[in-house]
Image 1 (tube, rainbow, N blue to C red):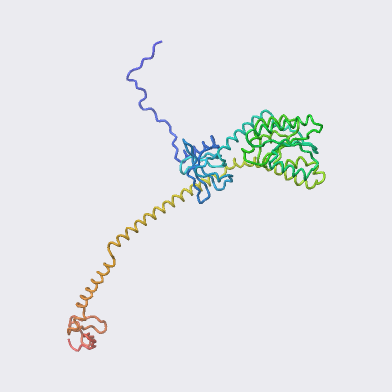
Image 2: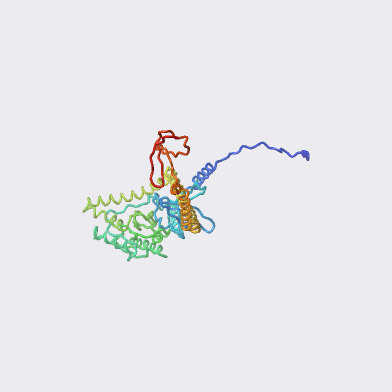
Length: 443
């Protein structure tokens, strides 16, 4: 098949038709970028080092988060209830959660901060979530496998440190509410390297004891006092979760404070807010039989706290959604713009003050060079000379030489021509000393 011939003078379309163009204004383009960032990226976690920290008089905090290769502008508005905002200082390495957006007045993208953590906690939190998802997928958290606790336990196992605050709290509550309860303690470390393995071994040892002893364990309490995420990390290890899941005896987990949640809490048959709360739950049946009315109040408080914890999580989620769509976002942007204008105005006033200061200094130097006191002295001397000349040329000197001045008596007009004087006209003649009033008889 022959190839279609083409002339060497065939250059194609020299002037193609004009294509349709979409032309944005700067504001439109910035708004498009802002919407794209908020939709595609939205809320993110970012780690880095704080620099250029600035606290405005409005209460808003502005700073830059940087690493070795890049940096991003950040703002923490005064009205945001963000814990640990004191971590934000120059040179501090932190982990931030925030909404990625664009500040249109400067045309730059920025992070609106929602949460602050010291760097390192984010890695632990990520590991926590990863293990939580893995175990949840395997069914370790399934509600249907949760076993009810006996209402009147007689013997329980206790897994905790023998020197910690948790054991003191548990024993104090048990003595007060159910002194007859028997406790089998299996001591172990609850913090540091190797603590997770000791906790798991203690749970298995109590299960072996319960299966072999004449007195069976009604439940096992795994507990420790409060602390940081690193302090509680042994209860987030997979080996502890497996030991709790495999336990034939129901397990109560009471680790940390009310706001602390661990993997052990999710796997256990029951999670208590604190060691003391766990002891109260375990002794609830005996205690309620004698003080039912008082127990109702305590139980309602406990349920209320648990409900609050669940609702707080849901409220936080809804609040974040509302914050992204709330009109306050635009108001905060205006406030940020106002801060910029305030800073520009302050800088302009300082520049004008410096300008007038320099100008005043120059005028003072010029005034010093022209010596105004000397000029005043010269002017006074000139004034005296002019005064002497004026005295010489004045009418008093002429009168002193024997001359006189004749004026119309009624008008005071000086008479210079005798023809203009009428007979009977009253005249006034001024001499060197005194005046004479006369009447013209003949001209």
